[in-house]
Length: 291
Image 1 (cartoon, rainbow, N blue to C red):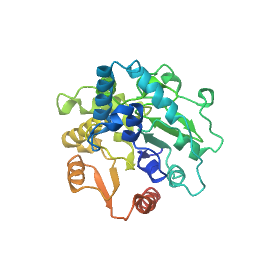
Image 2 (image 1 turned 30 degrees about the vertical axis):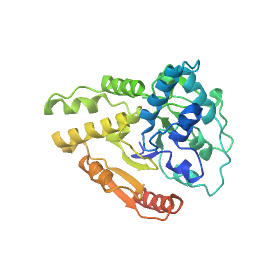
Image 3 (image 1 turned 90 degrees about the vertical axis):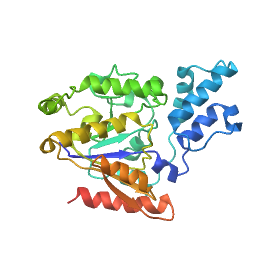
C-alpha cells in the first residue's frame, strides 16, 4: 500500500482565479451580496446565514436540496487545464491517495485529459455505491489514483456538505465506523477495524500532506480526526507512527501553534503570492516522498 496521501484544498483553484466558497455562496442569494456580511465568515456559517435569509424572505428556492443543486451545476464545469498547471503537478506526484474537500472534478481532469463529468465514466468502490449523502468511502479512481471527495461532489448534489447538520452527520458516520476509546486498552480496537478504504483511516495509516487548505475552525470532521489521532498518540504512541504535514503560504502564527499542538508538522512558506508559494511547496513534497 502506498503510504503517502495528498490532501488538496481549494487554494490551488484560487491561483487560477477559481471562486472561493464564499464567492459561490453569495452568488446563490443576490440579496446577500448587498448585505453587510463579514467576509471572514467561514463557509459553513455563511451557508447557514444565507439559508436563514432565504427562509425569512419567503423564497421558493430555500430548501437545502435546491441550494445543493445550484452548487452542483456550478462545480460540474471543468476549465481548461494547461500542461504546466500546478494542480497537474501535484496530482502527478508518486502518491496514490488524494483527498479533497472540493466538489469539482478538476483533479480528475489533471490525471486524464479525456475525463468527462459523466456518472457512467466514474469507477467507484463497490461497497459505496449507495453512499449518496455522506462520503466516508466513496472515491473516484483515475489512472490508479483514488480521489476522495470528502465533502461531496457535483454529480451527487445531496452529498455536498456545507451546513452544520451535514458536518454533524459526517462526524456521526465516522464515530460509528470506529470503536469508542474509553481507556488505553481500547486503542488497538480502532486499528483492528481499519479496512484501508475510508478517507479518514488514511490520517492514521499514511503520511498526509495538506496543501491549499484553509482548515478553518468550522471544518469539524477534519479537526475531529486530528484530535482523535492526537489522543491515540498520547495514549499509545507506538501505534501511530505516520506524519501529517500542513503547508501554507503566509500562514498565521495562531494556526501554526494550534496545529502543532495536534502533532501536525507545519511548513509556513513566505511568498509574495500564492502563485509564487505553491511551486515551492510542490518541490518540498516531491522531495519528501522521494526520500
